[in-house]
Amino acid sequence: MNYVDSWAWIEYFKGSRTGERARQYIESNEPIITTPLTLFEVYHAILRDANEEQADLHLDKIINGFHAIKQELDEELVKAAAKIKKNEGLAMADAFVLATARKHSAKIITGDKDLEKYPQTIFLR
Image 1 (cartoon, rainbow, N blue to C red):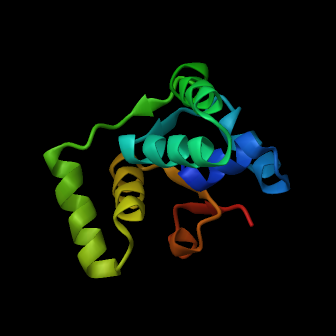
Image 2: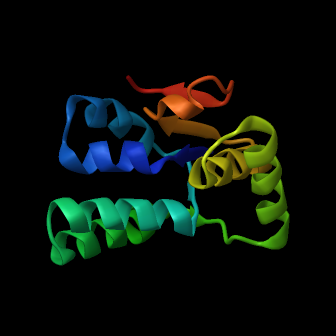
C-alpha cells in the first residue's frame, strides 16, 4: 500500500518531471491510502494555481479514478499524529501522513524534505 502525499499528487497533476516519477506509484495496481488533510492540500493547491473546475476534476480523480482508500481522522490517528508532532517536530499535515503510513504499513510517496528521513518514504527528488 502507498500513501501518496499531496506533494506527489500536485506534481503528478502538473505533469512535472517529478510528477512523472510519481506516476509509477499512482498508476500502479498498489492500493493508495489518503486522508482528508491530503485531499484538502491538493484541492487548495489546484484551486490556487488553476481554478475550481480543475480542482474538482482532480479531487474526483483521486477519490474515484484511483480508488483511493480514505482514512478518516479518528481518535487513534489523532493521538498518533499528535505524538509524532510532539516527539519528531513534524508539521500537522506531515504528522498525519506519517501516522497513517505507519498504521497501514504503507510507503510514503513524496518529495517533501520533512518526510525524507523516514524509512517508509520513497523520496522523489
